[in-house]
Length: 190
Image 1: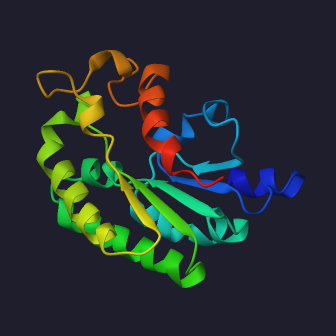
Image 2 (image 1 turned 30 degrees about the horizontal axis):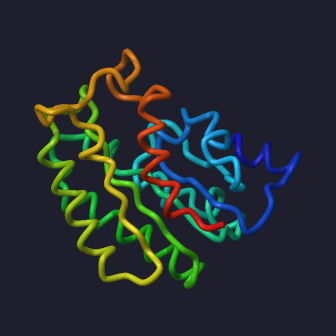
Image 3 (image 1 turned 30 degrees about the vertical axis):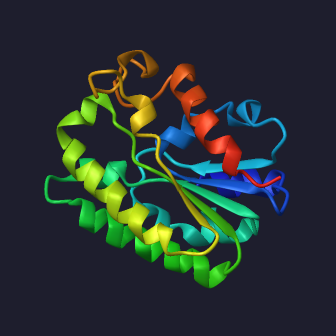
């Protein structure tokens, strides 16, 4: 994994904010410019599912001893197969959450809801179901926040805003990330 090589050259500072998950984080190359007053370590990797993040947690989460972990993952799980339900995504999230809690019982955790991507709109019922299950679970946890980006990424007709996405209708452009910034920044730890 490229992160290991990167870390061997310059290991990121401890007590930072760690981003983990899929390509919505990977492609946010200038994330630090959106949050200039925070130390951010971005360990999102393209195409990852919750199972991938769980598989690599010893490489992409635990070494960094972060003060806060921000997760964006689950959308690729749903997209990987018609048989992956919101309930399956929730069960996978719970495993990741419990693994993080075992290692870091007091670390603040933020989960960003799965987003409404135009290219995956036909999956929206499963995405909404997964988001809702995770939201209800997080509501009962300490030091954990569920952030919904869903509504803010929809237009007046309750469809994804096309102008906030790249041509692939999956990944966001700067406009999309500025929506995320406004939602995420209030919960980041100084």
